[in-house]
Length: 202
Image (cartoon, rainbow, N blue to C red):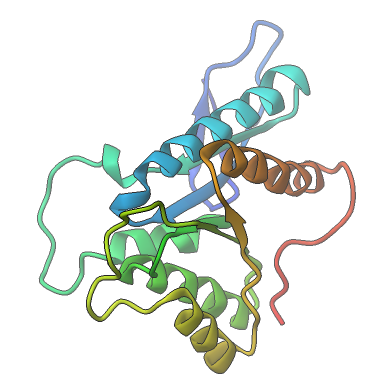
């Protein structure tokens, strides 16, 4: 059994291959969306799993690609008002956030995106990729009090001086393809193939 520091500072234990031990490094991502976008969360998980397979078995790199999925967490209770704390800690530990929006911006997703910009202001590089799924006919109305995408874009511009450039997807297949082509250059740069830094701290 070998142990390595993951990119987020945690230990990763990996059984040694037959030829000897290899220190593996974890690239951790976070998928953020509301419950109405769970189908696209599932697609994101599949894309991440497939890219991890490429990194490990086709390119034979030392990297693992993984994500935290709150749906796999055991049942528990949290202090009132602190339910988002766990997912915000995952933003701190992840290298990038995949945010999937519908007609509005769920509160936890809003906090997670803001946390990305807060970390950048502290000089900590984080990637942020925002996708918007066009609402289907008969979609549920925007929840009361939830900001629309336009309102949230204005909020980010006002509070952080950044423009949110998002990718709109009409179908699940379009989203899958967009996510794959978004993550691929990030991973190639991350493992030392290609050019381009992580999200700017500016």
